[in-house]
Image (tube, rainbow, N blue to C red):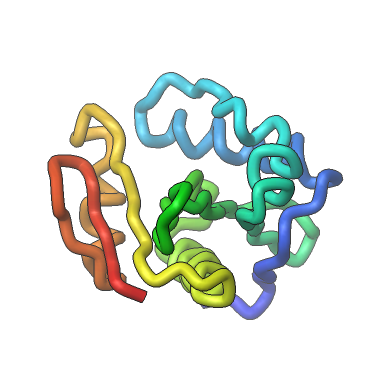
Length: 149
């Protein structure tokens, strides 16, 4: 992994750059780039609920990745959400570094099971289907994976 990348807690000043990166990432996967509404207000949708969200930035302070987690009410489990890496920066360890930060944040929050929901159709999520098992996740239902932390 390139030493120029930093993982940091999300800050509002990165919002537009992060949204731009996510839309580009979706476009590169052949998906219609739509904005996920939670990304418009990370503070309310994540931090205010006790959940967390991180970004990866390059040496010019541009967003090259993001991801977070949302706990499942009344459990010690959480979903990994919005783990995206800029298309031109893939295969450099950024997704793995973000997932490590997310899982460490989950552990600090007392979460013992991480879950992930993979979208439809599976052809557009082929990267996720190979990424998560490499990190210890296994499928427990169609398009759902989990890992004990």
